[in-house]
Length: 332
Image (cartoon, rainbow, N blue to C red; front, side, top):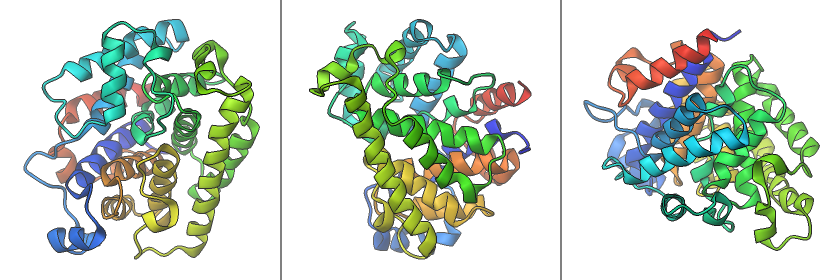
């Protein structure tokens, strides 16, 4: 069993976010010119600053601690945390436009299905969901329902819901000791089994806003896009080209299923070297901070708290809160 998987995953998320923040929106040649060889990339600054990715992951984690994982009890603290994030003076880390639009509607008191941006499957709902894969003592419908609900508050597209569910499940499997080599197959099986499962107790009538003929048809669209992304992941893992930009194989990560696939690819290319996986993820041509945050969450769940250099952890913004949450969940 992995030692302190929750601590390792939360730290990996934030470290990947901080490492990838300076390289987002840049092509690989520009990253190499500015930062040197990617296997030697170092965490920036005397304080390693996180972005909205970790800010919102912490919001999800705080809501999960404050409320029970039940739709009626989880939504109010989740809404409150998202609105608090919206109002925060620290919300100046290139926040996503979809999250901002939806959170303004939540702040105005709209029911969350009306606030949700039903056409958006951006990765904003995906990079923040990993804490729900680490929460102890939840199973059955709670983890997938909560994962999809937290996605739905901002990103209502079915692929945003399905990818968030799949991401939380991947973290859960790794924290429970699953071997990386078997992870893509396990995720595929999960996606196939849940392809027409619409969690109505958690999502209500969200599906009616999308123009589909049934809730099953609505959610199946999302799972089908995730399955296609897993196909690309399988091919990329077979090729195992560690020196080529992973985004060329599995996508740039601006949308949910690509962020999941490319974050997983970076982890699976270096399953025994979490720091190298983080560096590869940060040196990508797409949404580098989100890709590296996800790669770090996966690697940390697998390797535990000892995965990360202490010199990096010591410089990490929000280190104390991340460590406290991780310790609480690891003890449980």
